[in-house]
Length: 553
Image (tube, rainbow, N blue to C red):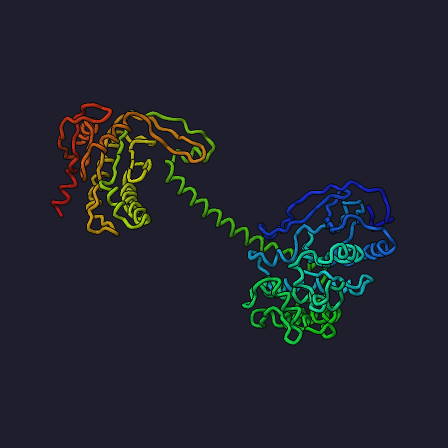
């Protein structure tokens, strides 16, 4: 490990390397991927050049010495260089809050202009120091090279060690000093026009800074929102050949802070000699801060506290919004869960308890289906019409059952199953609840109109039976509350052996209704029921109180 402190050569210390996502605290979902390692108990950022070996010569040692003497708070500190063959890597200070591009593209973070100017000031201070240092230029400046440390201070990284960049460049003539093709957007036009691109220059850094200012103003990627944008390659070609009419991103004063817009346009002028230096840009930024009543000589601690307050306000608002969204989604999930499972059963599952199967001495089960559903579906020109038809019918049924103490077990195709008396026991009221519900459904079906077949009357067939059942939750992935027992089968046979627009009930249900003495029934007679043999069954005609209401009306 070649180090930048004490002496350049020392024994290679243990370097623990791991890939982690460096998250931005104030934007819980914004993150950038970095290669992070631990060197002497401190987290460091690891950059791996695309080279297999490096020659430790006088020039490289001089560059390391120059990097060692960098003391600007707005430039990242070089930790050291690992020169092991096939494991060449550069260790720099790790900034845990991510990079500027992450923050600008995260819409959940609100950035006022005072805060943006503060970030711009950090960039200008860092670049001004760098241009005055022996390193002289950056050459690779982009918004991803502007990183935020744990104290919310913006620092510039990726500068220096030009000999490594030259080695990298010479290994493949198609490569350049920028690591990826999209980063060429930040490169000055005069450098793009040379193949392979020239090393760097101070006016070129100013141009790169102008593209970052565009991002600060619009919070958009450069060029992608232009009406003429086709691809990155096409854009780079336009920039290269735009000598007479140079190509730049569209930036309007009305959409951004006017002083920053004017500064941006000066920094990306076509002729390098026309662009301002960072020393003069520093004076412009100080004037802008005074114009906005921002003290240009403000104490560093005050600046830090202001930034932390800004971040805290953003985080507080973000947490409040996310909490509200979470509560709304939780409410929707609970409502959906209560529709799939009975409330008492759902609450037990949510509490992490197992639902023990129970037996019920007597409940009433309702089955119904649509008569002639196959013919209706066959006459429908589109399958969507069939789905809309079923949705309309069962939405009508669902509205009705909300008025009764019943639980909808399931719908399968055109079959509809409802039960009363479980999971909450209600004495013998279950037979009255199901009977009244069935009468209401028959009445609603008579008034229902099939939209795509208005001349076809809707008919339903209903069967009801009362008796003992067992019930429990079945399944883990999609748990269902299921009923078991002969009562379920008998109720299904009552429906299948019934007639259209009639409510077919068993003798057991009839005996329970007689206790109420409020329903009108008619004996159907003895019939053969599949799987049950001979059974005496009845028709449920109406409710006496319901008839009296009609007479009074």
